[in-house]
Length: 343
Image 1 (cartoon, rainbow, N blue to C red):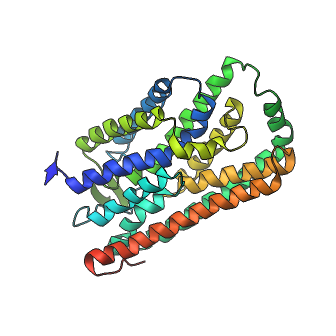
Image 2 (cartoon, one colour):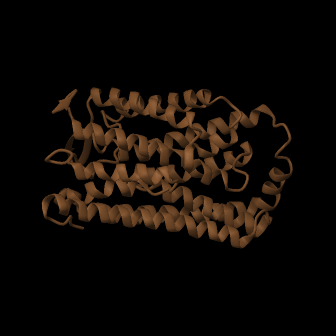
Image 3 (cartoon, helix red, strand yellow):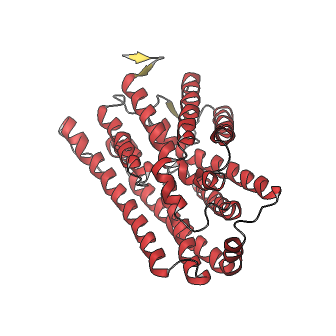
């Protein structure tokens, strides 16, 4: 049975993945924006983020020859037998983990089962995703540590001392511009985690892979994600947002702007590197880890042991999510078909 030419399981997987990814990963991008604009009406923030979402979706469709996943699904074609129930299970697990505030990597949780059950066409993709995401974590952590080691003694202390003072309007303009740039970069990376469930055509011309979605998928995706984004914003981010709020000075517009700019630049760098999907969660937590360690060591705004404990706890969540992802990808298809997914 199909609706608008799309299988029921594919629609279900897309809907659950869209909500789970927006509620989990998107808050790593928009979390500091929500924190530092907590006094503004939620619907204003939603309209801002939703307008960028629509622009990026249309830009991808019309400039990438119908590829609203921005090339991130070049190595992960649509399953030959269509979407199966074991493809849909990981985003449901992600939904549960998000409910308990665990910031796992949606890239690994959602894409791993496709990467390990796609046969020869997807062979080696998981390993490349792991390498690229690991590089992202290390680069982000070193960047965060070095930048904040240089500026934290003056910058972070200044923010801490003046956090209750009224800020000039230009800081709001700068922050919203930085958020728009970051949101764009994140969408280009993580659309693959959602659109993996939608039917598409994959062609290879002169060695170049071209993925194309039809206009129906574009409309369904745009409307669905806009509404889900509003639901998340109305709830002010839920449990994942509490993790972001617990970090040092993230409710300050100036501090949030620096985080957003660094995060966006790192994502842009890795987006341009190649078309292998990567975990934006690993990049975000790497950046925050480097930042928190630098602030604790150089600005003394929080105990060093407490900062290190938070970093290790976040790393534990990442590896927990990775283990869950691989376990689901290997054992669930075995239950369904009697065959283990291959690495």
